[in-house]
Length: 279
Image 1 (cartoon, helix red, strand yellow):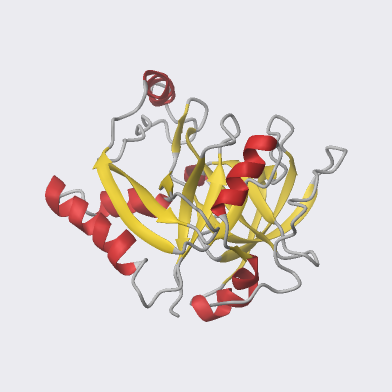
Image 2 (cartoon, one colour; image 1 turned 135 degrees about the vertical axis):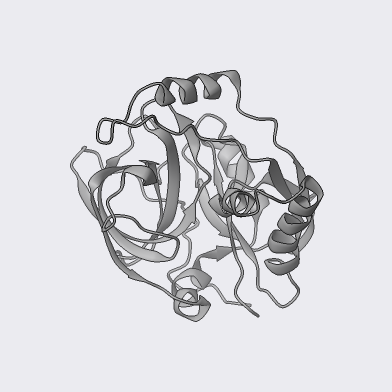
């Protein structure tokens, strides 16, 4: 188990956003790529997050919105890439980690391949108390909204049927799909809802923790379902449980959860991804 370093998370929380709206060049290790959400303008938008690596005390940063469909090949990136990006503080989002990226100013620098190359940056950022994050978010709307939390006990992964898009989400999808692509002239493909959703049930290390139930909004949960589209519901459910519980949370893995909350419901945290190096 990794020990917290001098450069680990500050008890004071994330740094305040700059007072002005000038563009800032950020260097990030991308650790989170959330599942896409319907967008009338872009078709689908994705929230990504990562650890800023160009400052003395690495801090969490959220980038939104990003449309991966519209990124050029030299701008596209994946989890555990280090990128540089121009961004401005997201003024309509009170969460201090939130920035709005300039889409044509993204540069992929390199990929950190394997857990050993990632651990020196990420192990010092691990925290043990999800309960504390919940308390602070309930007390302060701009409290820490991104973290890497090590569970004491992962009790279950509950996989249930996805209810499909809401009426508002479906309206946005249809509005986008009805417009021909300006570059190709072809009709746009609508974003499909996954068959299943999932939630982790776990306890953190805080004494007296009553447990946490957090939905998984990791892109990988949706991508796995797309790859296994031909599977029956029972087989697909088993595959999700095998991957996200049996493999990622196996006894020989030093698992931690990337967690983040919602701008409009700051008391609601979700699991954005799983960090699972070998012990």
